[in-house]
Image (tube, helix red, strand yellow):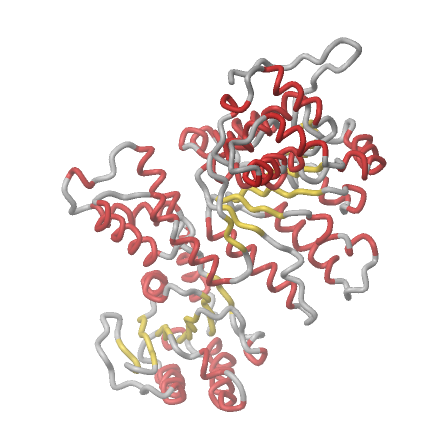
Length: 525
């Protein structure tokens, strides 16, 4: 367990006579248990302090040492160090607010004096102060004295213990059955605190009399909303079946999804990093990200790099680091970075933003290379010419895909998928494959979004004509009014296609187009 390893590191710090240790965590009760364990391992007696109870022994029994005022307790720690009676670790729960502003200058100075004095006292009277707080920032006056630890959230092993404790005394019918169900229940809670995981398991048992991974995972939405650096998006109903075409991309995603199974972990398969989708706007890049989240049964989060930028020095980088931290705690998820080239353009074009874009690029590149989270990143880009070349290096993403205009077969699939989305059956609209072939020919050069827009346009026309059902002619009439992007941005599209040759993997199988008629898949309508 990560927390066990952290406790061992903490014991080593205590033996090395680190006098001031600043632990950042929201899980006071869970982390205190590990601090007690580390203190005992290093030969220290542990006590706690807070503004309500004062100094207490491990079991919670109040003592006459110090008091509820932090200054009195810090004086008591100094007295303990000078008396030489026993070695002690003092867990200060509420100290951080007393170190802020002019009112906290006396407490800050007293703590700083202790941090300077304690490393030099005799071994038998060694004392250490552990500040336990949700805050990660240490006051500047103490920065040179404090050892900062960011305590990790429970990992899979610790969550498994929480799950076992939740169902241990329950009837057999409420126990976790197959191993796959147990793994899903653990995966759903990764990224929550121990208390949050236990509460979610308990709620699921009370409401459903079983552990429902979907209900447990929904708690992560609150975590994202609380931090305000990521946007929780709704996944696409129907998953990848709702995305027309892109067969090679879908096949590749299917093989990558296998890496999340217990057998794959035992085999040693690494977790997939992600994919960069480059291509013409409106051809399903963002839609695919939403579909992946549905197909894999994981949350979908949007990382908006532009929204994290700030005019204040250092604030943009701090927001990015916070976002990366939240992603790390969520566990398995899909992260969408939409139109990434627009957010990072300033890093290569000399934007007058004080170096914010360049700093953001550096932070993103480091995170993408070094991260250990199971987040799958889907980044999209419309214009690769302004994309920083560093982002294209192998290792940032597992694969780079080129998404071109849809082929004839894809145009048919996109149209039928759009009809299903609006509650219409293609079999009731098209009398034969000849009808759909006419529409495929009429949409030559259309993007996927332009094809999908034909259905609502046809619905408006049919509703205005007495509320009748739409037919083939409505769709053909709607297609006749569209000036496709392939005409308005023809030069740009050709430049993108030239770049993609040999540099990116096609997302769609090629279809032979020549003097002979185009071969099209027969569709059951």
